[in-house]
Length: 498
Image (cartoon, rainbow, N blue to C red; front, side):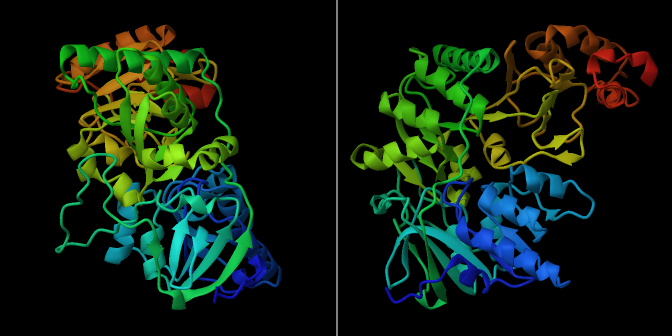
């Protein structure tokens, strides 16, 4: 190759204070690791001289400790968008003088950068498993916003990671839509339909060097389903099985989108085990361990996603059996995997996790007690608003029962009542379709709330004003205020807030 081989430290010298840096990947899958860590070290060294060093950051979604974690610890982040899940970064964001965090729907980020709504990246750092002298890059296990940042950036640094097999060639579908007013329909009509290129093509003159690495993705392990997550998963599975029997869902089923995490894995496991649900396809963001297991069993026919967010042994299994998996997986940029128009066209059944829900179906996905950012909205909004059926799941309580996940009014709204069709906890299912706010409240309280909080929420309705959506504005956050004062929502006395 004609490109210069650099150490991570040499590559980091090309990133300066005030630069806007875009990173490849989606979750820790496909995210650079060596160069971000070296940038953090460079920042610390510059800070030690009394000089400033902070960068703006674009990523596909969350990343790993070597990227978000290292840069947050080094106080090297001026702003960060979109989704994140690193503890050190989260703590920094929630401080008054922390990085400016812009929470944005994942499908919108690339186009908002192209539109000029957000500053153009000056540097793109892309993880690849192969590259040639013509600037043809084979990405690794995640795509994210790689096409847009690589095209717009002034300089490109490649992390060539030999941990990922070159056999990934052909697994990606790289497509960047035109911008308005010239945009045409995105011609995806089934999850397996490919519309782009297996390679990411960049201007080779912009590549300032290659950093050779051999680093595994920093994807954490998933907890085995416990009693609560298994019951949630079974309730989701039973609900969808009944929808098939009622004729609400075609007998051949519809593609599934599933969020990230332990509940999502439990839900997928239960869907795979339900004999009344046929083998199905997925059109989603992240392809997790449970999806690969169901693929081996023939229960998942095909999965379109933005990343292989799987544990290292599972990723290695995929790489060792590419002949089996190659025609069953495609990885796309997130503005395609999360595109709202495609969600509606394909008729997705979407399953995402709520941090808290209220008795009318409004969902808080992001903020603890209304102000502290947890992770971000991610792609849940992209999918929920346009779903064939949108489902939100949550355990009914948290903190050993001291917090009810279902409250009179959510402290932050990410998905409103008009978009949430079904709410499911370990206690049951609230089908909110075609229901008035009062009917929704009764269904959610009776079917989804932990028994220790049911009467409390019924009592809230009794003290609420008359109206189409009954609320008592003095008491609607009473459960939250009680928790903040006593550490336990079960101590709530509505009389204290009237």
